[in-house]
Image (cartoon, rainbow over all chains, first blue to last red; front, top):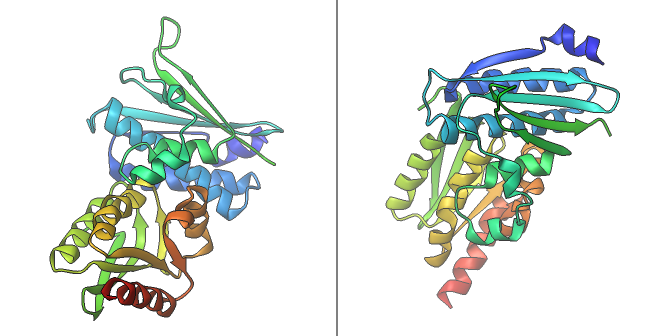
Length: 146
Length: 124
């Protein structure tokens, strides 16, 4: 599987700019399709990654276009791993999980929907804040093949 | 308006507008839809039918536009409904449970019928 990923292009770095979202979507969709995910699932994985990037642009970088986010893909026999790295203030989104669907529906307000979506699409979510050994925050999203 | 999103509307009755949303609705283009919907409501429309037949992509920012307006519209006796979603778009609505809080129907005519029933009930 790693060979397939390497053939696609395993990493992109984007500016914290909403115009970059098209590139993120294409990158993730193409990789997911190549790995054998169906079109619907590939679209959902791309959506989850886009939501993670949008949250970083907004909350960590305050839409400062000079800042960057890196997305690195790797795969093994179990599934696809997406590593998203940023340099902003550390914030652990997994601390907000699980999100109550009923609360989202009742409030019908903006906010929290992106993270809710990520949690519905991905099978595992990990977060590692930057520290002495890792200079960037790392969000890892994992999607099982089955 | 961003090139990747196209929005058109058609008035089909008193306070009733169909809005056709085409292309990519993400965090970049969602403000365009938000502005369009706000203007449509400001013109007195409270029954909004979104036809998503040619919508290729939607993210939470796009969904947030509908969530931002629906409560106010329902308080005023109106509503938001959806017609002609593709399988790809419906999968996102379903994942988030939006099919439980919004009417999503196959055709414009079915949505119009639901709106007319609601209007009759409101006027009773």
